[in-house]
Image 1 (cartoon, one colour):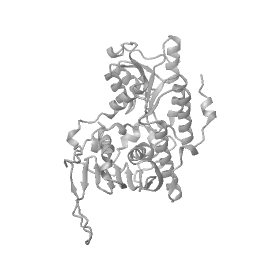
Image 2 (cartoon, helix red, strand yellow):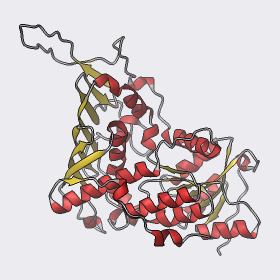
Image 3 (cartoon, rainbow, N blue to C red):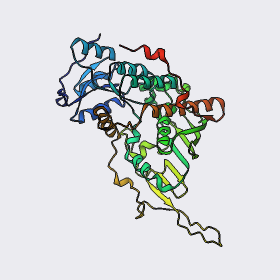
Length: 407
């Protein structure tokens, strides 16, 4: 067992019966953001960081907490010192590590907020969900955009569109070479790299959150441009999709991480400090309905006024933006402070642990549905044919996997 790296405890981490003890696993881009939000809450304490990379010691030092190389070392430390395990964990590690870590945590009754995707395969994903349920462990999946105020406002106002008919969406930018050099797994399909698993899965989750389950997809890969070095030739750079939802709504979506473009969720909402906020972005989603169209994130509602005369055809004037119509107000971008979805997600997670809330806003099944959509996208690319998305009840559990982790 490697000894933990001790530092002076942070003042907010003095243990008390009312505090929820957290461990944050992963010191990359996302883990430290989660840890900072934990430290901001008076009802939470940061027990430790778990990370084996060169960044781990500096992150732990900056957060005034212990550092462990892996979960086994953390558990051994607690056992040797007769300490309770942390009550909760936030898992922000590479995608291929999630299943093993999730099983280890659930086996010890540790609630978890786990970044997406839960697992590389639907069977592993469903098995982790079932294992958490068997151990009475809360599992919240880090599709944090569900907590973004722009998305909340969009969902609240969808009824004004009437019957939902179609949707058009984009997530497009250019990732620099440093993004791939920093974490080699991002260039490996086998380890969960590529923009389909890293980025598109977020948007497919949101589209299903807003419009309901996707039942069929067709996908074409975009032209690859990265040929410089490393394993870039192994991962996708994006795809163009057509989608059909169970409610009959149809749509198109373009996802790319290698085009010059500001049309993506992060730029339009300002939620990610690593992506410049652009307050002029409009329509990275456009949702079309029988009574109107809603543009996101600018939240403009387009509608048409008309009268149907018995003896004449229907006359429709040009649509006009109406964010401030008295009978159907829509929030404007300026109405929102810079969103903090990670803080809102953590608040929800704490409420689930304490029992203040019981309905999980992004469950394991939600994450599995998004992963099944990605699976259908990949199959469509491989076959050149449209694919129906598998149902959760069609996925088998891996009992051998689940039995490995009982302690």
